[in-house]
Image (cartoon, rainbow, N blue to C red; front, side, top):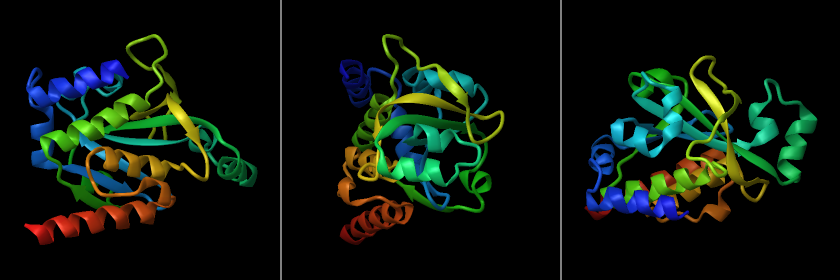
Length: 210
């Protein structure tokens, strides 16, 4: 956790190149694939230094990030029992990283997208939440647990925390947005639509206040 705080302070004070400023210009993007929301960050060299796991995607200019139940998320075809256990029994979590290049709307053409513009400080808060969610043990970099959902361009990593019905993959995304300063109550968000609706409401309020 101390390392996370130092990284966030470095971003805020300009001790590293302006990762958050560049991200604010482009925004982060929420991707609703139906049962789950992922969050897309633009990749630059500062993000690569701050998130060593991105070495797995040397040519990518975006990374989509998700967090969820270890068994359900990694299952090729999760059956009823896996789904039931994921919902009812707290289980270890994993992080999913998917590196890709090109416009987000092209990569996720069949998904609902919502761009969330962030200030420098907001992006640093969001990144701090994501960074702290990796279980790196005593090392600097989390090692892949196995291939991800997109062949050749995604990996699963060990994560901190447990997945349960009270804290789903979508709750984790809501927590990330709350860490960024958005006025969202994560504990009341379970579904993908809940995340999207809450984020959209905050953005509409911000637009109305300008």
